[in-house]
Structures are given as structure tokens and as C-alpha cells.
Amino acid sequence: MAATMKKTAAEDVNITFEDQQKIKKFAQNTSRITELKEEIEVKKKQLQNLEDVCEDIMLADDNFLMTPYHIGDVFINHSQEETQEMLEEAKKNLQEETDALESRMESIQWVLADLKLHAKSGSNITLKLKHFI
Image (cartoon, rainbow, N blue to C red; front, side):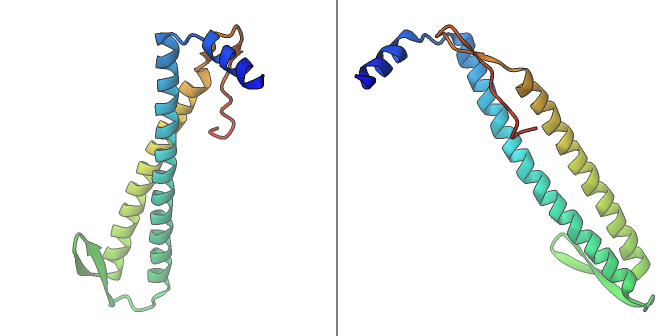
């Protein structure tokens, strides 16, 4: 009997093209947020690695020590000061990339927060996005 009631309720619900578009938009945006979160985590780990390397270089007392710096597929030796400057520039660029990703994720969260899906069963369904915000 419960299966019959569920089947009847499912048959009564008509989903319009507009509802389908909203569902599609919601799914695409939630997927993109997940991708952005993963990218941000990778960038933050890279940033932490650069900060660790900067600290290690500062702890080295020998200013005349040549420090290898990885560029592409090769390591190039630079003075400690040059390497420190290159690392600081890399950290700055990485932080800017992370900020841009976080800004993009925030704008998508606003889109999702404004998105409401309406079911044809007579009641409105507002999707809760607490886990995204």
C-alpha cells in the first residue's frame, strides 16, 4: 500500500522546464564549489610548503651558500637572498590565486543561496546550503 501511495505521489508531480533548469544550475554550481574547495586546499598546501622553505632558508647562516631553486624541470642555483626574493614572489602569486578562487566560490555560494526550487506538489522547497557557507 505504501508503494502505491509513493507511486501515485510521484505521478502527480510535473516538473517544468524552468524547474529542470534550476535543478541543473544548482547541480552545476554545487559541483563547481566542490572543485574550487579542492583547488583551494592544494594552493594552501603549496603556500605552506613555500613558507616552510622560506623559514629554512632564513635559518641558514651562510649568506654565500648557493641555494637550488626549482624552475620547470631544472634546479638553478641562486644566492640565498635571490632565492628568498623568488620564494616571496611565488608566495604572493599563490596567495592571489587562492584569494581569486575563494572569491569565485563566494559568488557561487550567493547564487546558490538565492536559488529556490519549487516542487509541483504545492509546496515550495528551499534548498539548505549550510554545508557550503
